[in-house]
Image (cartoon, rainbow, N blue to C red; front, top):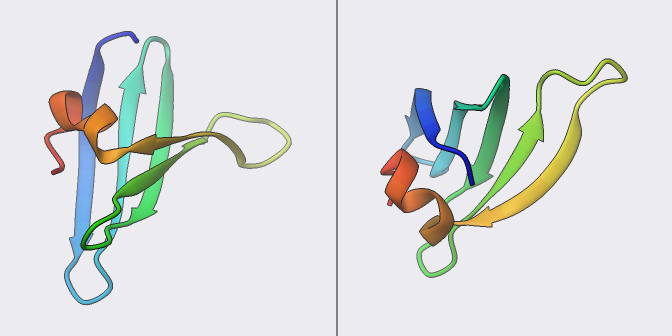
Length: 71
């Protein structure tokens, strides 16, 4: 995976919802997800698709830990 740069992150403590954007290569991706106590997953969603927002993949917390320092 290319180097991932965290450009924005926002935490809502009550719902444990995370929303931030990542710069991967030439594209900027919007990541939205809910942090659970034992299971942490994030959906990587393209914000550049012309036909609307489309889900690209689902990342585990471990996949994003090194690059985004979320967990």
